[in-house]
Length: 194
Length: 71
Image (cartoon, rainbow over all chains, first blue to last red; front, side, top):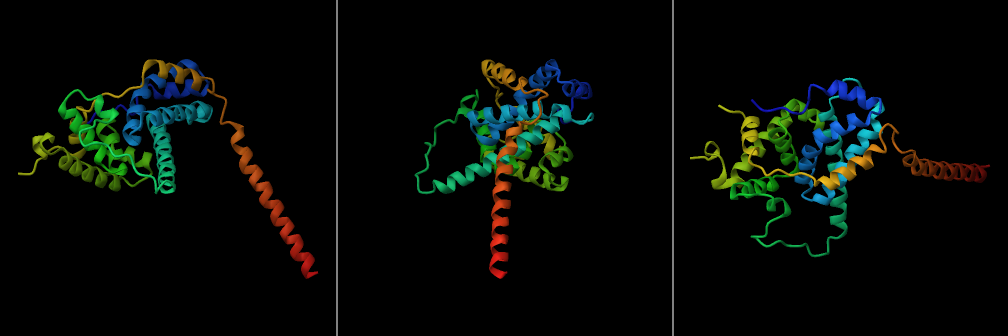
């Protein structure tokens, strides 16, 4: 069974407290979702500084919209929807910037150089895994992270990404296939084709 | 037979843990809590309103000039 931590049972009470502007409720939400959102943002943007900015913006939006939250708001889905939209906006801005700076030489990394994310890894398997996730296109990586790491159901991810559930399932299957290819010998035995 | 979601979840368990350092997290929480319940900043409407005013003024001037020419 896939773990699903996206909708804690205390959400209705937390939402009610947030709507009243209770700082303790905000602390609870911040503690519950900070690490998960940050990890998602770091793996989507591949930059810790950007992820930190986007994380703060995500929680700022929660603070600013707290009074207007619906009583049945699912905080996890709400926060990941905001974070997803911020990542999309950041990605668009990056694309424009890259186009404007098209003549500048790109910074090449040496083949054996480890990224800041890979530096966190403590084993070759973790490094291979981090690199494999990084090779996925953002659309596939996002689905793989939300389903695989966050334990969300494809139907919930479909709502967050504003896609049809079937599209999410297709992305999931393709992400799995690309991960298997990128992982090579580090892939789980069941993934390796004979 | 496991489905894709379950297989990815099993695989993702080996990903390294990524977290914000405590100092940055505390600073962020403190900063964000200052905005709790205040609503979206009103400043974000200033630029769109200014742009709308300029566009409406320009269109009005243009229509006036066209009417003046035709009349």
